[in-house]
Length: 276
Image (tube, rainbow, N blue to C red):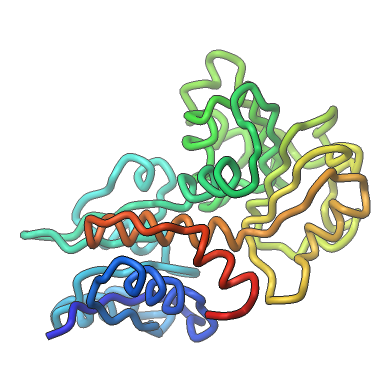
């Protein structure tokens, strides 16, 4: 029987993950099937358990189930534990281990594909939810000098900042959106909001001037995310969506499952062209 993997979510039919993993499998000579798995909003545990009972070997997890996945698995890797969210499940001999490859995928895309230097960088991270929680540790590990977490609710940003060991060294702080000022080398949007204009963003537009801006959300082919449009309109030196992060986190999941690290640049190029 062919090894089975899937991405579980709701909705999930739009996911690019099956195309990405099919390309990885073809390039590395791995025989597998990767599908989409639609879980009812009220039965993530039952859907996932049934998939594994039927012989499934691994799952990617997308919205809105990443936090439920963290509670469902029998053990967590450190980034998943820190984020409180799981995007990759690996079947073990006697249970399931949850991983969060999103933050590492973000850093790999920024450094490897976008050429952004993170060592010594001053970074603004917008949002304090699961996506932001998964990004804090990898950004700090990459050597950022200062990390400001901005959120609509200041208390949530402050609470997230307080969980980072680097807060004691003054490298991490949390604030409300209206408390953000100064210049940044990198601005990362880790919110799920559209962020279409100044009133929605709620941030002084000066923070993106001459900054590299990155939206964790990726746009449909031929379009630009609202956050990227806003950043470009206010003087960002570049604004990139999260398609590269999607590919990089998928490659890390593929390696966890198959023990083979696929090349990501060719797949990202194919996706940008719309050829897969």
